[in-house]
Amino acid sequence: MFQCHHCTMDRTFEIATHFGLSIREAEAAGWSALAVECAPCGTTTHISLWRLMKSARVGFFQEVVDRMRCHACGAEPSGAYMVREVKRPDPLKRLNFRIEEWSLGGEKPVELIAATLNAFVANAAYDAILPERPNRPIGLRERARLLRSTFNTDPPPSNIVPMAAARPEEESVPLRLRRAK
Image 1 (cartoon, rainbow, N blue to C red):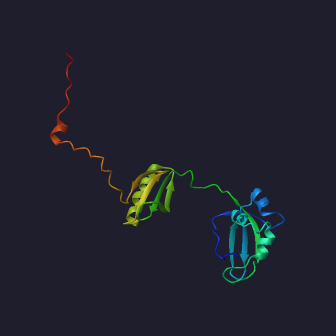
Image 2: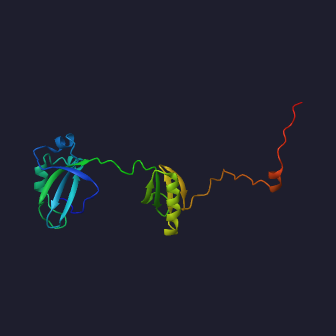
Image 3: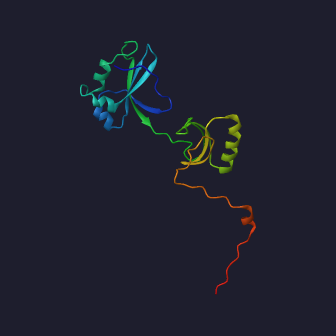
């Protein structure tokens, strides 16, 4: 049985409609999933070949498709095809500075707001975004390093003692070098 749900649309797939291969042969040839369409529901479901190979009862795609019924409406599949994910280059990969909205606890980024190559542009964009999103956890990162953020950070560990502030009169007294005897 397959469940009707919307497949993710941010991937590009190469499609083949021949089912003469066994599931293991298709996996060895680089195919990644079986896509099954349900016309009454209007959805497409991708079932990974790894998941199909775990089932010892099936060996060929046609056997799988013949036994399937839609989980929601009970209809037979209107179409089925093998898919292979095509790797697309990430256009944001080379943009080192990223401004992101983070989860409320500051554990992970939720939304990418801006990305740039230039540190000055990144800082200006960060400053411009803060008034637009008050009380939201916003962070500026250079790759993995967090440069600036608005979310609360944990206090330092108890074994770290802050340095004492220098008294004003000590700052103005110049240091004198001792003469060697």
